[in-house]
Amino acid sequence: MIKARRGAALVAALAAGSLVLTACGGDGGSDPNELRLWHYEAPESAMAVAWNQAIKEFERTHPGVKVKFEEKGFEQIQKTAPMVLNSKDAPDLMEYNKGNATTGLISRQGLLDDMTAEVTRRGWDKVLSPNVQVTSRYDDKGVMGGGKWFGVPNYAEYLQVYYNKDLFEKHGVKVPATFAEFTAAMDAFVRKGVTPLTNAGAEYMAHQFVYQLALDKADRGWVDAFQRYTAKANLTDAAWTAGAATFADWVKKGYVAKDSVGLKAEDAGVAFMSGEYPMMFSGSWWFGRVAKTARFDWDTMVWPGARMTPGSGGNLWVVPKGSENKKLAYDFIDITMKKHIQNALGNAGGIPVAADPAAITDPKAKKLIGNFTTLARNDALAYYPDWPVPAFYDKWVAEVQRLMNGKGTPARILGEVQKAYDAGLPK
Image (tube, rainbow, N blue to C red):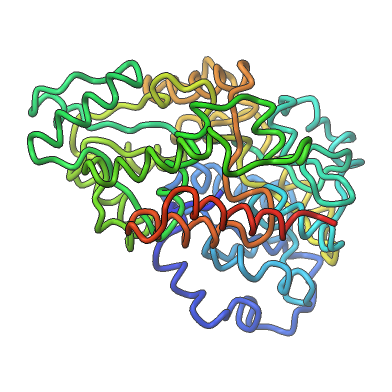
């Protein structure tokens, strides 16, 4: 999934595709006393907090070995990973997006180490629940859920509604518990001249609304056909049509601002955290930042009435095939899976995969983790709409922007998305 916690300034570095040329600033040689690590978590995020602790422990337990950490932009890595991993500039360990279009694609291209034996030897397969494992394992065509492990997550994530309790109280609007109450609350805000939902049409937020609204009409078989090719996926069916048509209607009604079509997720998140909007529908990756930044009373909830919602295990630790320090890379992953690191991640606002529940002390963090556990137990995690095929993310962004601008009907927009989906299916 594409995420804005990655920091707008980092993404700007993508402009000239400069990652391949300037990533390391050296000759690409490997140092056996150095673990080169790339990730794109913002410094204040829960993951970065926990991983910084893991770096200290790694260096303590590996005398003479230093971690050379380089922070990259999410989209920087997203767009250039195949080139980087096929060069001498590849790191020893890297955080990477999961799904057929990303980890699946580069595993099929032979650019990642098959870590199946390492996963079994270190017991990570016993720690990760089956539905979290799906995005770690791929088949020979790069389709998730296969038999070989090409990545390991040490956290999980899902989309939820963040809401500003102060704005609800100020405007006399009831916090919703059902979908009908959700739309009623948005109507109430609009009548008072308040746009209920922050949004970002230039990145992932807008098409995730479309996906969630489609999921409200869908089931697990529908998700698996779309994400895992278990049946032919029809992106113009009743569920998808309802999702696109409802979102277009929401734009017309003022539930989201039409001029948000050109905004990025960072803009939308900052606007919510500044108290400008009553609600934000986005990922758990914002949680730690909202907790540190918001100066108002806030809380979270799962999408009202959702049978399924976007979510999965977190982004993956992947080991490039060409890494000459694979053992060090696996040792570092192992540290991030340890209880005390997992507990630190949970208390910083992340969703750990192997924490001690009793060690999580913050009530909001407990709720965050508890909601994910319930979704996972109920098989309600539906992954993300941009995952199934390469270059699908950019297509979703472009088409949903057209939908917001009234430059295409839901049928026409979904028809174009279907063409991109069909063209990207593995042969």
